[in-house]
Structures are given as structure tokens and as C-alpha cells.
Length: 266
Ligand code: BTN
Image 1: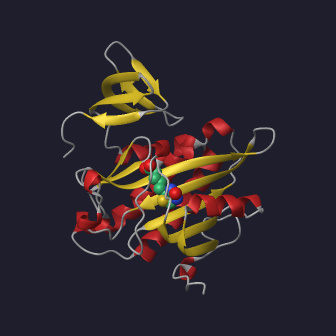
Image 2: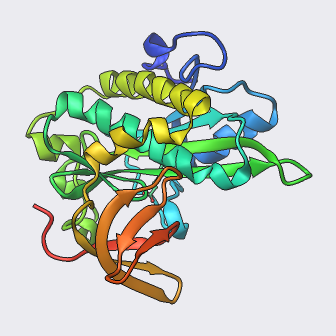
Image 3: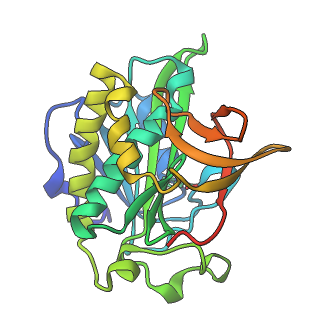
């Protein structure tokens, strides 16, 4: 039997707008794969997939995304932006802004973004974003599968032991349970606005909002990309979303890598 879709109530707008159509699954391997199939069969921009549980949730860099049932938000949004393939990573920064703005409504003052695409609450990771590009036969961008995972009502005991000092949820950080549907509703609305803003005016229009949440600006960090490791003080991000790192004698533009922060965040 197909489960009742509790997110039906927040479907809105015309095709093309984020959340105009919501496909809901009780259990799935990964919302990224369901969205990939929908996109291949011509689904309009703004179509999204939500699952209660993922059996093979994917994170960045080949990691798995812990996806227990009934407590969090796991969603993938199909976007068809008129941008070159190289600009796709910016979409995850735009989603980060919308996620931070949505969480801030429920948890003011404790939300931050860690470049490139982690959402933090009180200095621990509560959400992650992945932007996967789908290309056509000529290697042009066909669509972006924008995956967002947010720990909402995950209890501390349900965090895998190896992540306990790094991960959190809205419930843990605020001390109370939160309404997943209301958070999803805010997220999709805010993302629709921020995405349209980016498509019409460019990423630079959204950059100040990203900077407002930046957890790293002014902090000394280390960044590792393959076998290259650099340390420096973060100056912010540029108009393309690259991290600006002051390494002493100059400012480097960093486009990829895994960041670790020196010293405690709080
Ligand atoms: C990260 O590593 O921080 C990115 C995590 C992205 C997780 C989300 S959950 C919904 C969507 N489906 C997946 O399999 N992954 C993304």
C-alpha cells in the first residue's frame, strides 16, 4: 500500500517552482536515485522526492548519510538551471542559505554554514547538501539533483557512536521536538526564492546572505584537497562561491576540499 503523503499539504505553485510536486516514499535506497529516474522521464523543475528512510543515503566524497526512519528530512529537488556545468557547485551554496534561513526561524542565533555545504547548529553538523549534475550526450548540463538532509528530531542516542562529537539535530540543539513539515515548507519556499534570485541575478546576489551565516570567516582553518593541504585565515567567499583563504603572503581561491577548524568553534 502506498503510504499517505503528509507533505501533500505543502505542495504549491506551478511547474517550475520548487515543491510544485512532491513524491513521497516510506523507504527508498536514496532520494537522489528516485529523482534521477523522474528527471530522466522528463519531470519538471521543482519536482521533489522526500523519503522517511533511506537504506543507501549518500553524502559527499562517497560517504554514507545516516538516514533513520521518521525523524529527519531527506529530500532531492530536480533543478534545470540555465548554467554551465562548472557552476553547479554554487547550487549547493544557494541551498545552504535557504536551509540556514529555514532553521533560523525555529532556532535563532545558533545556525551557521560551514563551507562548502554543511549546516551547523551550535558548531555541530545538522545538515548536508549534495549537488549532482546530470549531463546529456554532449556533456551539457541536463539537470541538477540537489540533495538535502537535515537532522530534525534525531535523538542523541540515535547518532552513530563515531559521529557523536560532530553531529547534532534541531531537537538536540533546541531542546524540543520540531515540526518536520513546517521546516520542509519554509525550506522549499525560501529555496524557491533564493534559486530564482540566483538564476536571474547570479550567485553574487545571494552571497551576502551566505556570508551572514558563515561559520569560518575570520577563523584559522586547514583545508585538504587530495594530497594538498593548506592552512590560513578565511576571508569569506567570492562571487563564484570559492573560499578565500589568506595564507600569509597572498589570498588563495579554494574551489574544493575538506575543511577542519583550528580550535573549538563556540
Ligand atoms: C553531505 O555529505 O554533507 C551531504 C549529505 C546529503 C544527504 C542528502 S539526504 C537526501 C539526499 N539523498 C541522499 O542520498 N543524499 C542526500
